[in-house]
Image (tube, rainbow, N blue to C red; front, top):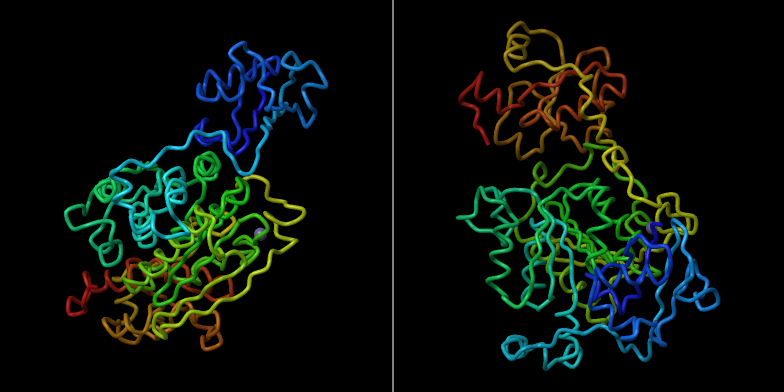
Length: 473
Ligand SMILES: [Zn+2]
């Protein structure tokens, strides 16, 4: 029979931090034996040397005390849940905590003299773990400060390589690591900073298939992602695994910060039940970002993570902080838990990770239904004085750097509010820098009943194939 054994938090440290261990067993005794053979350190906590259950450990089968049935001989059926409930007094824990060594006592001196941290808090940090989703702009300061602070186990999920354009803000990486995997560069830097911690790298895309298992191995999760599908996946997987989600996001000069999915607190979906339609919010690669901005927000995420791990202060649960670098201002808004939230509400409809690409409307992007032309075709239409409207959906400063004569500037984000300016009787040809944003604009215009055509390769193709005097950027 395949059964799930649920471990209390006090015992998880002895079982690779797992909350649920699935085993095959016909009786409660066999199930515990299978559990202990997999995680040997549990044996002394659960069983006497004679093989009996220790008197301060109770075992329940589907919420029924095994002692009221046949004790260790209680038979199990497929799908049964075995719950282990040890006596807990005054927060005493059964887990054997790792102690601080002499070098660590020296290293963490400034923490040890803080009453809010002290030796006990520092030991807590050593015995705790954080999963950073992404080793980019937010993940950089976050992982560096968590490592410096002595968080014992830091996991990082990422699958990108370091690019030159990352170095303006991703301070975990350096010039010699351009072209190498971000994880290798991150691990090297963090271990050089603090050899007393373990850095676990997960070179994979976070998916609905792997998120729950990965999250269960850490005490909390820090969201440093840069796209909506992953952001919703991180949120839902945090709610489903009971891991707090230390959230940060950035755009241009503005940042957001909160702690979601904590017990009693709201989640990201309580704040934003649905993502914006694809294309209307540009990514940082398209919209730009001030290099130090992720430094500010990622550092604040590290503050929240350390507070949660130490159990000190007032965590940012139920509050959303907005940062404006240009104004140099912080604003704090209240966020309420939504009882109708599909994932953390009273009657959740999302009980397992879903297809987030589809949820965020990104699957339509791959459907090749919208017409396109090359820059050569565009040039010939212009030369023949054909009647059409050419619009540029880039940002004003990009339009300043380089433009195609006659193009009307309507930045992508403004397009929905400015469609009235466009004549429906004319064909609309759309370009951007390299064809991505304009494809989204064309999809939007077609949905509004316009005849719209995308320019493949954007103004960069124009600069390369038609007019070399137009700067490439
Ligand atoms: Zn919610």
